[in-house]
Picture 1 (tube, rainbow, N blue to C red):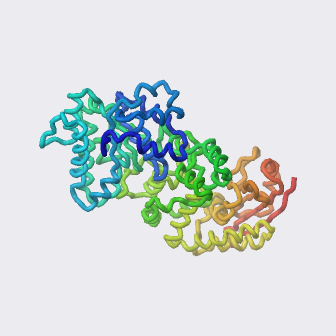
Picture 2 (picture 1 turned 90 degrees about the vertical axis):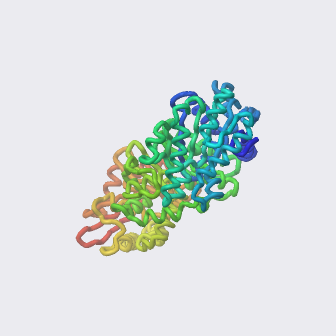
Picture 3 (picture 1 turned 180 degrees about the vertical axis):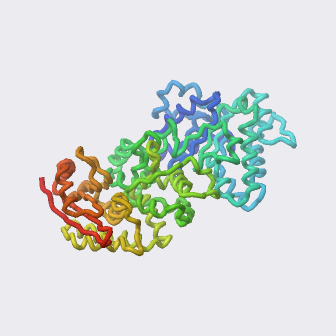
Length: 525
């Protein structure tokens, strides 16, 4: 077994020796691309979404230097018609770009050194093939292919690592792009490679590399095409893990669910789920990703009202985003759309492609967003978050005056969280003010009731004995009108399917006096 070629199945074997959720059907999708014009695949996901494990699985399946059938015999791929056709049939080159960055970061000729390392390892596997002094990697592979008739599978993990890490070194980036172009745009690539699978965080850059790598089919957090189900864990998969490990599924759902990836509407962060079941505790596992400091910097830019959008999403809202503008380059972030799209690719936001909207998916990510807000010293927002527990307690005991006063505090004339341009802006601030309630409640903005939409509905989570909340918001109206609308449209009857007692909460903001009023009533079915 080599270092970069014919690595065998030892990496994937470790995954199978651990708790493993079967995502092997990805192999069938890749099999369909082999020896076609679609053989060039670039699959990008956020950190902690299983990129490397998928690459290691493909390496184990295709590598002809091992007999990996036992690793796949009990997996879904074993029943696929293509399973036998490609199992252990190809020489596989596997390159993890982060390992080269670790070794050669301080050296300007990192691409030269990387190529020399890979070529030396491949030549050891094919000693009968002459390696000439002026050969590059593609020349060597062409000569091997011509002599043996073998076609390679080339797998690159963290393909974009050099582009991300060397943002201020254009020569290094250009050298790397030229290397990729030479490998994958050469006219003989069709003969040399059975398939190419690159995985990373960012899609292919839209200008410097587009012409170089425009033959790649891209699958991303924004546009996963037919691979969305492989980007995370489904509800059924997480339920199985919860039962096996004696975990509360409702807690796992609260912390790690909420991603929409293509047509897959409810996907869990896989790494976080696995760490939670191993540690028997739900908490944030983002600290080790290394991306938080950068995200804090991007949020600080506050392009075109980005701050307002972050606040809106922390309050459970969704905001419009145009992901087509982003150049897929960390050094070129020029607009609010660029920042939001970057956060989607990194896994900090989820993307609803039908409406071109993004949102904070779950409690884990919301916590990291709050950390970013605190780091950026958005003091008024931080104060509102810190007061949110007191606001919930005041609501539950029916203290309408205190609720109104705390809403005033959250929205003062000179230090406003958001301008109240409409009831949606009011809904964002109110939702943010109730941020603490997410610990015990399912949060629903614009909750469908059959007779309209309730502005904000909080339904208790399992084993929480507090009443549900139905909140109706008005601007330049009255709290009596808000409560009346709740009753007339029969909102409580719809919510009663989920719980017992319900608190009806009407909140009105008077644009002239700059004051909130509140009325709270208890409804019992």
